[in-house]
Length: 336
Image (tube, rainbow, N blue to C red; front, side):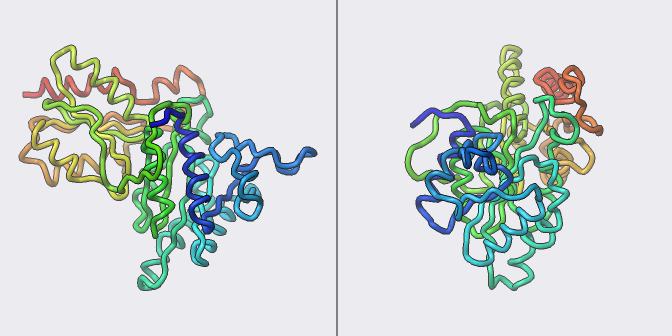
């Protein structure tokens, strides 16, 4: 095991997969860093530091700085994938996914289906998302609910450096388009990462904490929020089974339903707004398939149905917190 930050795990995985397979190429806005300056390419790895050193090792034909055009970036990735390459494209901020939504929704997601399975589209689209860094309404959104709703796309959300490596490796080596979502507030999180080849299957949730009283389902940054809440509730004698989804499409339905058979109580923590969200989807799943196991109404802890505020105090209030999760858990425990 080697300890590293999540951003380092992503950069290392990209390096390893490019070294392993010459068909893997990376592209995106400023992923090299310094392009066009007097000093030439500096290979800083973009604003998130997730592709540093790749240009020096693999050159301009495999590490491609693109114009500021998300539709061009994803469109190029689609063409590369159809022609036998394995592109890993970066959208600097997930908020700009609307610019390339046609390429994602009507092209990447539908190639295999519309061509009768005669072709595949092994493209990975990486994007940073999420609030908490005071980046305001147009650079702080969580759009995974929107993308999860699109058939034909796989949606992946790592929360630890180890998961970043295992899930990204699986994404790059797969045969379908993958949306790989990286929370900005998790890039500096440190953790142990397995050395050598390491892959995590999609649709396999991670049990973060075991407990028999309440099931808490979360993804992305909200996993750490749920974990902190569960740790505090343990002192009150409440045991929480915390589930990290890892992927929202496919979603590990069995992990959720099996846990509900034991706990009978469900709290879903979701950073995105509540209407037509991941949280409401999971609540529907539980209501449809585990109704007889439920001992209390399902509680949803989500962001409000508003844009992300810029003011730090408002942004803190906007995001789900450990206190809000604990209040929801106490509510389901108190229900008679």
